[in-house]
Length: 220
Image (cartoon, rainbow, N blue to C red; front, top):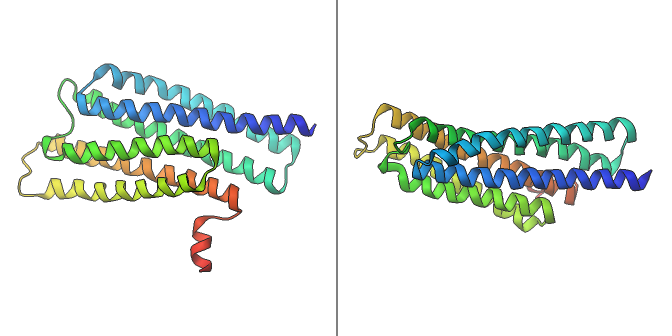
């Protein structure tokens, strides 16, 4: 029975990594669709989100089955509960990539982001892609240095999110109301994408150390 249980746990880990790889692909394509007004890429991201949702449902069902049938305790329980939380974060990251793609599709054939903010969003896209790539690596390796790098990228996304408001409120802003709305929405999507990456980083830290990063800070 133990061997079967351990095989199920490994499958949970594999499913999380697969979800993360799909999210990684989605945010990369969504950013390119946004920058280049690429309708086909935007459509691909929107369609692929269903696969991420299906993986989440399957993974969550497996976790609930393990909780009901195996009554895990200690480390095993921590792994399963963390997997449920991380699958939710990954699903939400997929949704956010889809939202970016939907904005790109909605403005086609024009570019959604006004030139005044284009550089900011190029950097936001780069940071979000790094978060996604590092999230996949973290789930595969549980390397806490990768978890710290995700938090640093999230800090950068927060800073860039603030810069979007500076662009909108600057004297040089001459964009339309729709462009202002798109910048506000997409900036928020990227900022939240980073937040969910940090949530996963903290969950993996919890699995490795037994507590959350904030616990270390409070005890210092």
